[in-house]
Image (cartoon, rainbow, N blue to C red):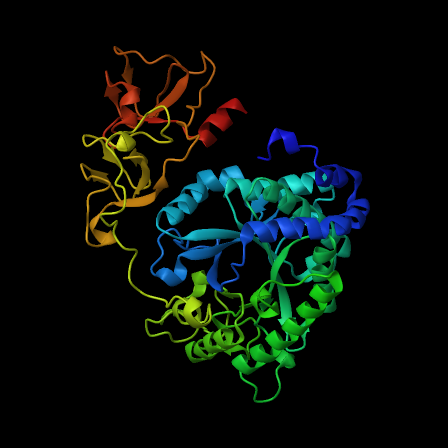
Length: 522
């Protein structure tokens, strides 16, 4: 959060006054904020590779367990407006931020990725659903929504993927730009600069006119624009006869470079490192949405060389979810899948190939398939005190070697959260194993600051009889223990219902589910 002493900064006041007024005055202060951010950021304009991950797609992509250096940095997509509450950020319109933490373990997985040396960016928008600025018409609430996501995931970079109807909404563009400028100003005052990338559709002639409007609005509002990431995919009719996908991409990037250079000049901005460092490219692995557009691994190698030769600032990929061959059981590889590429890969990945183009000269770190190195002697190992599990701050019960855990059960052990992949008892969650198949536990990530045990759901006294040690209960019987409702799985006598918490498989009792409790209350 911004310090109390800065709560009445001129940017926050202007946001409250409305979009138009802020846009006018934001231009007057643009050089000031850009100068502050440039000083904080320094001259770091090195190129990067980060693949997109569709967070809500199934099967789930385990970005928190990068298979190589090429996949350790990710762009998590997409945060969009809630269909019912337009100023509430959600993942894909399905989960708000709290629900994503509970149902997707997203907070924990991001923390685990960072523990393993990676990092995450968040992308707002995308082709489906509404980007926040399109639906949220209240400037203050829009700023709060962006801020909530940045603070929730402790972000240094955000990506605005503006497409389709969002792209043509110029009022939304103005709102978005104003909110981003205000957010950057807040972060600058907290010595936490925020990079902002725009990801926009492009063809061989470059950005569309609507796309250029988004760029110009962003600069006019005073946003320190890190760069424009061109979606180098789905060319269709804009490709010339016989032109390859890499050749079409080169024409596209040349056009975007010139357009962005003109936009910077018009805004009076001198791009650090030159315009190319502020241009990005994102091809789509394998079969594109346009049937005639296919990117093979050989094409990807040419694209990596092109990115290196041009010195672009960012290389990405749509998407890491798709970066694998479809297999013999996929019926038609010309139909785009969100889980495979549709082309032969022979064990190679697009991420590994493209990551080689993310840089120039000595600045580029070669991609490697080596796993994340084990801690060295110079790495401080956690102390015994740091491994002690506290029931008061553990979101799930602490692992017990005497208990049995059915598939899907979550436990805490040594300040980490694990989920049982199958029924298990006595298997140490962090027991060293050579392969993932040798352990019944899946590491989800660390216990997070602010974690607390999930509160037990209760029912009013009298809803069911209180459990009695002398009672005899048949299958289906329901009882209360301190207001917590339980259901008997089979005939039982003298078995305390709370035993189900430590040994759910053997206990004759099971707590009522949230849905069962809701039906009772209804």
